Image (cartoon, rainbow, N blue to C red; front, side, top):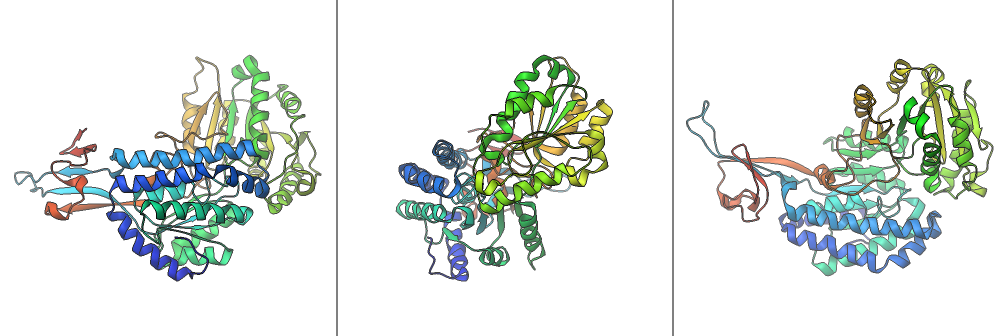
Length: 483
């Protein structure tokens, strides 16, 4: 199911054949494949964590937890497909007396075919070879070809061996899963006619280039990209007056977590003007150690981003140094402070993502100025509000809801629960689609709706049979019917 000896054309041909077999398999069969992969990864967790730590410097504690998250989401998708509502099965019976007469229509979601998945650097398990994109695509009956990330290539190859072996032992078809590597191969993968969708997590420049390739094909395909996010945080005057010390400690822990390499790192924090909060954050951050970064390229880019912020008039370095060698010594935390007026004057410079342990405190004078500067913030994965009970924040929450896919209250955005309600996606450039890449509904990216009119039951998916043999939730003649 994964071999370096096959050409890309051979891999996509095999993936096409396997996708047909997988689509015809029962949900219970595919769930058993996912569970087998999860079990195999758990059984080899110690070996995988050791390799991952050597390549990413993320530490065994973090990586062990990430393996558990990865296997947990594989098992979640097994539950999602056996529960059955993911099919969105709908039946409208014929009604000759309707105006106009209504035929029998039955609608269901079907897998789209072979999918390309691009691994992320910052989550070498959960957003990589056996991560959420791969798991959700396999769950609904798609085959998957993963493009390995160069930052953890050995880990990718070993993980792929384990995944392929588990699938084979569980009875999955050959060609259902494969791994490739290299930038040129990745580009060719997006352009291969056999590929029907792409999942991507990475930088804005790289993601945008692949997005443009996917949409400019003779047959354009969906590109589900997670590209970049500033994750704004708003603190109201009442909240700051009540708990500034706790907020400073929480922010310091959040923006430095994992050397600031989380896609949900709070990069912008809007605070009332005239407070001492900047000094409190500086104090809370001063003992946070420098940490190794995922790749030398990321480490080299971090100081460049810091110096770019520091060069803008009106920006103050509250703590830390912009002149650091992150590649040699690890990335050290840096806290910046500026005003909403400065951001409104130079949004193209200050509303940029700097990947690493840094955050920008932005002072606002009143609600009107806060609203104006929030309107300039690009689409994000998260937006967070710290307010006191009883405050009228309806309009503010509405504005935050427009710029992010997940709105948090009195918490911090680093940390993404894997469950049925999760939304990990937001307006561009956070993502290039309306869908989530984490949680149960991530499967929706790799399905397409098909309606069958006046079809004989023998050709229909069991979910559309009259007697509901799968015992799944369905909508019948406009009414939701539970098994």
